[in-house]
Image 1 (cartoon, rainbow, N blue to C red):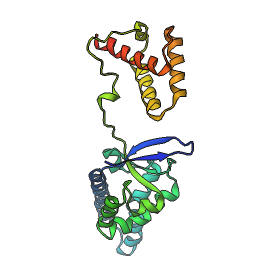
Image 2 (tube, rainbow, N blue to C red; image 1 turned 180 degrees about the vertical axis):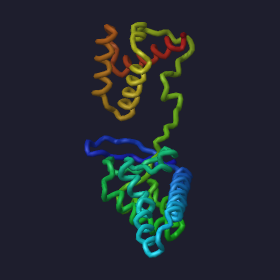
Image 3 (cartoon, one colour; image 1 turned 45 degrees about the vertical axis):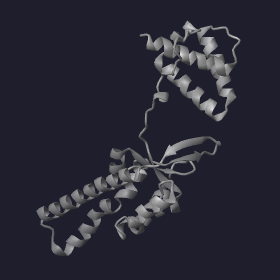
Image 4 (spheres, rainbow, N blue to C red; image 1 turned 90 degrees about the vertical axis):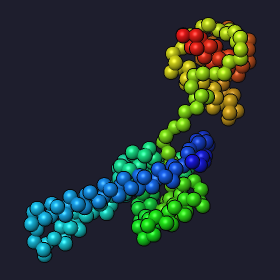
Length: 238
């Protein structure tokens, strides 16, 4: 699963994981089964209605439209997902961080014939593997890709901090926070420290002191880090 950065119009970097090729193939299989089932039911209905042969072609074309437009309609009205993509937890997005529009989905759908239909998916798989960012030809033309919405949970994503043996907490007042609140503090702190955003850390420092009524001369970065460690310490004692 390849990770890439989306640069938004506000110059904010967002890390995204491209959808695994296996997930995209499974989503395609699910969607194909749905289309096949639709066609089977459609033919069964036409036979049951005993439609006149001369009229059947026109009715067939009309009733085939939902299946023919399946990917375009689903991605347009399900925010970049088809039923298969929904089950596999993947979604179509723009590379610049904006939401794909009508034209983006239309381009992907038109070029699906080249990518997948005419080549049995060969060109799509080849392009995804060599291009990077999870893009088939339709994605390259539309400026889109397919990302995974599944999150890998690591120890660093939890409230726990690795505490040294014999760690002594400094601020028992941190227990006024709820788990969800401390998780937010930790996420903001970790992201701000990683990106060198001192303003966020300073804001956290001031907010924590206001809520807990803690008075400390520690530097904001050190203070917030100790608060998180202290909360982790008290949480582990429960």
